Length: 358
Image (cartoon, rainbow, N blue to C red):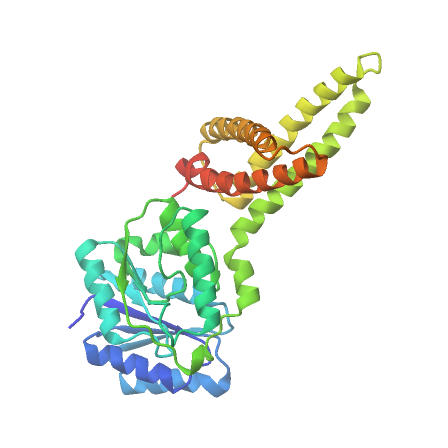
C-alpha cells in the first residue's frame, strides 16, 4: 500500500484510457488518486465522474472550467496536496493515456522516498516503437539541455515524475502553464542544484501517440522560449549599440580627430548596450532577483572574457586558414561568435545570475 503519497493525473478530453490508468494505480496500492479535469468539453467530462463513482474513497477530481494547460493543472494539484494532505510524503505525476504503468509509478515513488530527490522516469528512445517525432524531439532537446544548459537528462519529455513534499511549493513557482512547464522544471532544478535522479521505465506508445495534445511547433517555441529570449536580447543590444554610437557622434565636437571621435563613441555605445543587455537578461530572460551588484561584476568579467575570446579566436583561425578575403574573415567571426553565444548563455544561467535564483 502506498499511503501518504498522491498520484496526480492531469487530463484534457480523456477517453477510456484514463479510467484504466486510474484503476491500475489503485490496484497497485495507491490509495489517493487526484484527477485534474483541465477544461474538458461536455462530451468527455463525464469520464471523470465515472471514475469518481467507481472509486469514491480513492479518487479526487479537481476541475478547471476552461483549459489552462498541463502545467497549470499540475500546479493546481500540487497546491491542493499542500493544503489538504498535510502528511503527504510526495506525489507522482502520471499521463492519463496509458503510457505510464503502475509498476513504473511505484518505482519512481520508491526512489523518491529512498533518495528524497526529484525523480524522472526515463524511457528508452532507441526502441522501434518510439514515434519519429518523439525520438527526434527528445534527441534535440536532450542535447540542448546537456551542451547549452549543462543538465544531463536522458528523457526530457517524460511526464512520469515523482516530487517529494518538500519540493511541492518550489514547483508551484516554476514558470509555465502548458507543456513548457515540464521542461522548465528540469531547467530550474538544474540551475538551482536540486537533487534529482533518473529511473528507467517501460517505453509505451499507444496508437503512435496520436492522443497526445503536444503540438510540436507551438509547444517547442514555448519550450525553447528562454533561449529565444536570450537571442532577442542580444539582437536588441546590438541595435542599441549601433543607435547609441550614431547619436553620441552627434554630440562630440568635430574639432576632435575622427579616429578619436569614433573610439569615444564606440566605447560609450558599448557601455550603454552592455548595461541594457545585462538588465534585459536579468529581468526578462533569467528572471533573477536579489544582489544586482554581484551579478553585474560577474557579467562584466564574462563580457571582457568573451570579447577577448572573440578577438583571439578570430585572429587565430584567420592565420590558420590563411584568410585574406574580408568575406572569409566575416564568416569566421560569425562562427566564433555563434559558439560564444551559447557558451555565454550557459555561463550567465549557471554563474552570472545563479546566486539570485531559488
